[in-house]
Length: 106
Image (cartoon, rainbow, N blue to C red):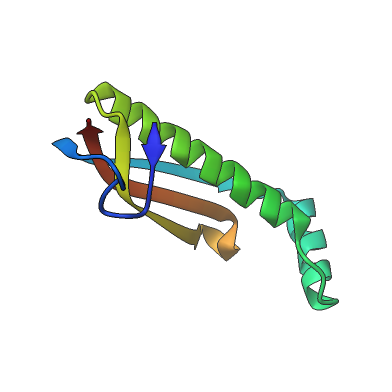
């Protein structure tokens, strides 16, 4: 399946627009990882724990959006938009949401 942030697929003609599809992932973060991430942030280092959680959430959301597109018979998703939010008490949860338009191209 082709996934793109652009409104079209170069070299292909979009045959059918099948609707908006979305995928979301909300992950809780571990207390110890939060603590060590804050320590790293204070000393100016990168937070590997958060980066891994963010990548995992993004992967889950992309998997969901592709499953939704397949259900409606799409072979591509165009106009993809990614959104990241910190949620929950004290920012204890991470949300990644992805949306786009499911299409069938020739």
